[in-house]
Image 1 (tube, helix red, strand yellow):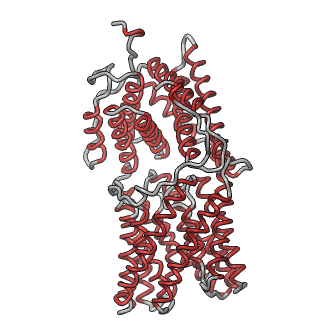
Image 2: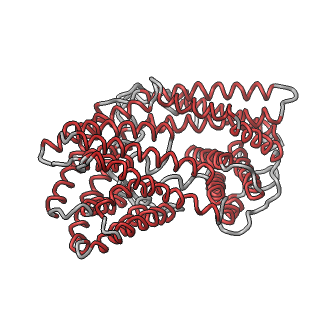
Image 3: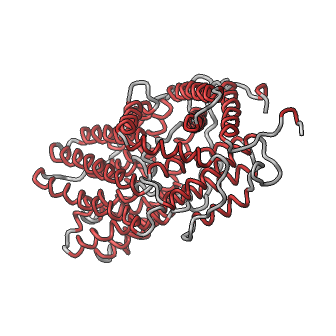
Length: 572
């Protein structure tokens, strides 16, 4: 594609999709892990409370049990730290809600606090990139607790229950490390090999970006996994092969595989399948440049262990919260939309409009287009879900044990189905959330159904209104910063290449920095392309930066010995 084939966007109003929004996808690779984890983490405290005839306390243990949903794509070393922070954040939000509920019964005040909490939770999840399910679980727990009558003297006990359940959830999420401690890294490496195979088989902008992002994620997983083991070292060599396939295809794929030719997609796919399995990690011959690349990885790993690496991580987090960050407009959207949803729902007669707040919070995605799609999925899934609740409630009311089992079944179904499409998961989440209300006492079914349906419509409408009323013009600024960072990384790589005797570590560091900046540029442009009310994106500049960056990457890979470029002008 030539530069002249690309034109700048003249408007900042992307199309809002209707077709395909509800289309089902295949199940995620590890869909069963969060599903089983949350069921086990919930079943033990729920059945214990059932044996003590104190099911009215399930809401508090549920706050800790839901923490088992987080961190399943992370290496166990990082997962352990991440889930601890999730538990502490969940308990902190619950504490604010319980204290507020004990001090006032003003619905207006409760809605305001709920909206602020939702905005804070959204901001911190985006800044830390906590990943799915993100802020919605935090908002669900804190908003529900706000509208539950509370006595100050019971708050410490309730928080203790949440903390104890959270500690058990932590054990559930990190426990598999005793059986297969390199499992997350193996899956990340397999995804990188699969993505590289897809790009080698069908080169293109999208497959190239997917492969680069998967390789980057694999390196991050291996770097975060802790000290190298023989299995991790074998995985690192496989990621070098995936990265070499990406560089070779970018430079000009050949028709066959060979030590210096194009990558063989079938071979990469076979390695991916074996890596994902339980047998030994494949041990192909080392790719050219492997020694230098792994030397650079070891140096980066050492840097992450020292104080400098920790300071850089804290600095990145603080930059995400600083004025001018693209995270903040989404936080303003969340605050505005959740408050509007709560007040409108209350004005329409819903006495506990926490579901409207949760629905509005769930709408907010990285850009307006994705938020629109999420709103449609949420509305459709919730409305079907209330019908499922109407069919199930007679069974759940047969006995307290039946109620507990129904909640566990919907817990599993929600996490198992949500990877196929968000609306399908919502079909299970909605009856589960309504059944949880039953633990505190039976309510008229029709009242629960009508309130939930009304809250869903109000929350989605208010959430979308805030999306379009509060523009995120900083999304374009993120693209400009990514362009600048890419130009600087490319200039740095060019300087290293120009040195007569370039250091192997410097070459590897320059190439990794340029790769990371190109992935960030593509992510930033994808998000900005779906945002409203902003200036036109510099598409020609982005295309030129990507093309120049990939040329420099190819030259760097050639200098490292990863690839052999074809002769210029078609010479043989």
